[in-house]
Structures are given as structure tokens and as C-alpha cells.
Amino acid sequence: MIRTLSEDNERAFFDQHAGIVHGVLKKLGVSRMHSDYDDFVQQGLLKLMEAYETFPQDLEQAEFLYQFTGFAYKKVQWHMLDLLRKQQRKWANEMSWPEDLEKNQPDMHAPFEQAYQEMDLLKEMLPLLTKNEQVYLLDAVVHRLSVTEIAKKQEVSRKTVYQWKKRVAEKLSHFLLVLKD
Image 1 (cartoon, helix red, strand yellow):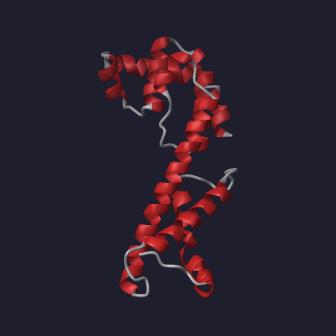
Image 2: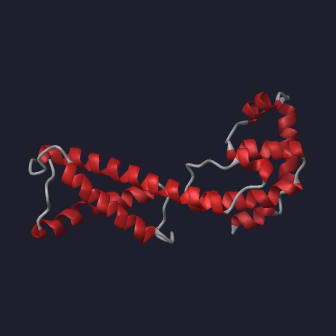
Image 3: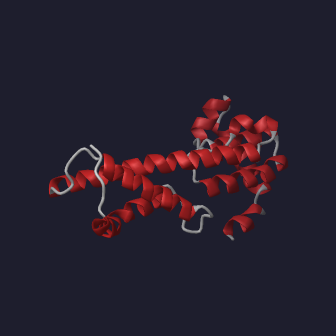
């Protein structure tokens, strides 16, 4: 069933439900300072309207209004995730990793700006470290593994991993000033 929204009800509808779009963007880590924030809002409002048109129940009944909110939220969220993934793929193609690190790219679920900053910092940090220290840093930061998990993965003792961690902290201590700003 496709329903249409009259011009009289349009303003009230968007006043009541536009917060869904902003909530989704906030949940996905897209700040208002993001260069494409306004575009994402417009795309979200279009998806919200599509959700209104395709919702299977009668929205005039109060009992279905709550269900519509969840339905619309998910529809907008999935669309925003698709847009962010497309943007991230485009970004990844434009700024590629060093060849030996392609298999260790950062978590693709991180917000776009955060992933960019992580990649940029890692590119600066890795040449300063030995191979084992690089492995530790990638496993700890990118893959978010614990010391125990890293030890099992690399087939070394936890003590060895703690030594790598200590040396990485010493060698990269000057990056703390950058990270604090």
C-alpha cells in the first residue's frame, strides 16, 4: 500500500519524525561538522518519506505509530549505512594502503573521519617500529585484540607481547602530544 502525505500534514509529519534522521546520523558517528552532513540529512528525509509511503499499517491508529518509528529508523539506518559504505569504498580507492598492509586495514565499521585519521597515524607510526612491534600495534589497534589474543595468534608468550607493548609505547610516546590535541 502506498500512501501519500498531504501538504497540510507534511510539516507536522517532518516536525514529529525528522529527529529519526538526526538520531541515526548521531548513532553512526556522523557529526554535524561532516562535510556531507546536509546531504545525509536530505537522503535520510527522503528515506523517511519512503518509509511513510510503504508502512503496511494505518498510521492514524496510535498503536501503529510506535511500530512506524522503529520501521522508519531501521529503513533510514540501513540507507545511511549504504551511503557511508559507498563513501568509504570511494575513499579507500583514492587513498590506498602500502602494499604490505592492505590485509590489515582498519575496522570498516568505524566512522569515516575516524578511520581516515587512524590510517594516517598508522602510516606515520609503522615505519618507526620493528616487524613484531608493527604486528602488535595492528592487532591491538586495528583488530582490537587483547594481549592474550595477540599472544595466541602470534604463538608467543604474554610476556613477549607485553614487551612489544612497552617498546611501542616508548617509541611512539611523541605521538601522545598529537593525540591529545
